[in-house]
Image 1 (tube, rainbow, N blue to C red):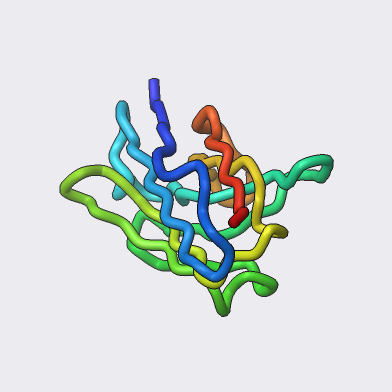
Image 2: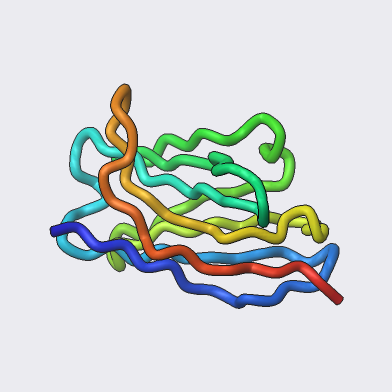
Amino acid sequence: QVQLQESGPGLVKPSQTLSLTCTVSGGSITTTYYTWSWIRQPPGKGLEWVADIAYDGSTYYSPSLKSRTSISRDTSKNQFSLQLSSVTPEDTAVYYCARGIPGWGYDYWGQGTQVTVSS
């Protein structure tokens, strides 16, 4: 059973950088052919894909967020992380990490973590 757990600050000030980490257990983030994703849901809105890092370390970003987003991984800790810079209140959302199967969807999700951008 794969489990994902998000961690990071729940409150970030405008213009600062949001940093989140997803710790994965029960499966390796280097296992072919999965992708590891960050997805967010702003209040009252639908899910929005943010970024992926694949089993081989390849990275993919939402075009609308690409200029402010960085996704990375630490294979020794079986973790992957998200950094979103220059945040505004519009970045307030529940942030989820998930395991993706290319061409199919997501089979495992973290419980989500609320991030609020406010001074």
